[in-house]
Image: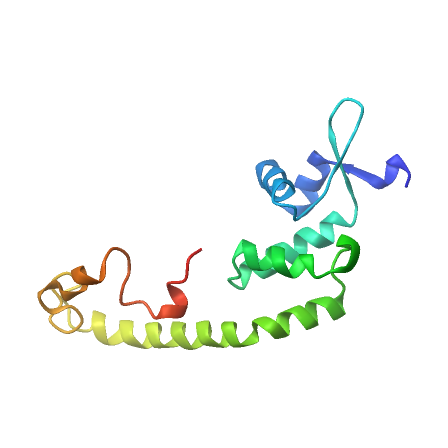
Length: 152
């Protein structure tokens, strides 16, 4: 590979839209690879742009980083995903995404009736949280549907 085929971190940042800190993090996590110059500067193959686009797309549909890493690990020799790979991998996420869509729809529909009561306070809302029963469930948004409460 010619050195002209390699991109600097600045070029990858500009082309991908990811911050340099994100690139360093993804490298530590094994999601992307960089080579080093004799001056210890990172250089990336152009194919890293496709890999980063894959990461962004997967994160935008709600996948956790460990799920993205597991998906990328199924690719032979660490190559970047092709359209066929994306299709294969996205099929494995279909049920999860359908569950999230259903949960978001229930949340959206529930918000209409909750806000309709006028109190605008979940702590004292007589319909959704009488006498603050949600406090016993622990911290966080306990009324969110389970698929929307999964760890980030």
